[in-house]
Length: 463
Image 1 (tube, helix red, strand yellow):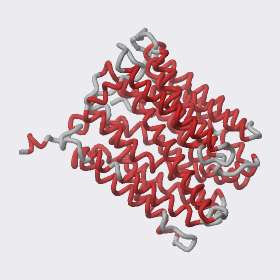
Image 2 (cartoon, rainbow, N blue to C red; image 1 turned 90 degrees about the vertical axis):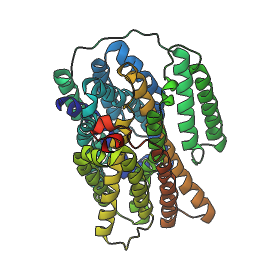
Image 3 (cartoon, rainbow, N blue to C red; image 1 turned 135 degrees about the vertical axis):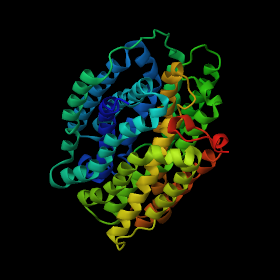
């Protein structure tokens, strides 16, 4: 396996992960400077995810039409421009728009980067390649909270986005030098109707769920947008069944391994998407910690995720994808719930250990579902499968943030006070229960599912 390809592509994931964790840690400080509330600032997180939902579906077509390497480099450039716009923002509106521009770049970086990995790696090396792709990306969550907290505490939050500029320039240079040039371009017709319907559907669902409980907008705005999103999504399903080359080929869901990977992974990400929103807020609002102190606590989870990448392939080879994913879903959900037991009196070493173990389970599950989705997908369909898996990931993460914000808003309405520590505890218990439901998807897998990816002997051979 050529490790330079996944390592170069991981630069994009590094920037995205760094950004999301930096913003989560600095959310209260940014909200205070912009004259809004942390919950209302969810619009910035949502704006990014809405932009992803609109443009991810077209990423496969773009890669086929213009070349994956060319699209990947352009996407990094757009993301860097969005980062500069974030740093220059002086209002909630400008910050939301800047994050949306970043989302346009992110919508191409991750799925196109993953497509390059799949096309250049033998299937029996795909688990290792995905792990190498994720290892540098884990440095983002590892470094994001303490760096973001340090800069926000001792300087100003605007500078946290400048970090992406040198990283992005380095990414473009390494991509030009190391990514393969030989690509066969495919000039297939763009499904414009599908693009419009999928964009309206996914963005409507994400935006509607996110703003329905925000005090900054009337409730009917969120409900109306959500209804439009659901209707557009249903229309897309109807449309995709009637055209020869739909933008997102939903017939891939007929494959059980692909279906379970996408559905089970999405259910699990509902909880994982909420944790980076809830945990830094709980440490700062509920515990009274500074952004830097909060970041030094939350980065422990990334250490666990980072270390697990080195043993992912051997774990799947020993226990199989079904058993590993089902166990990790239960373990990770349990440790999400444990976050709801933390108080300011909880010893820091206990918090460290809980976040560390939770990060291990989460990392193994993500590597598994990201790889397993392509176990039985032919090479000519990978440009269709990659946008589907990526948009499912981002939409589920967005819904997780929306659920977390909604829980906090409803909880404060009940007691009529500002955010209390108990509100965060309730949120963690609810999202842990939701994430744990992924177990019932993974347990349906055949025991031999994905054996060709991990090198595991089949049950038939063992017998």
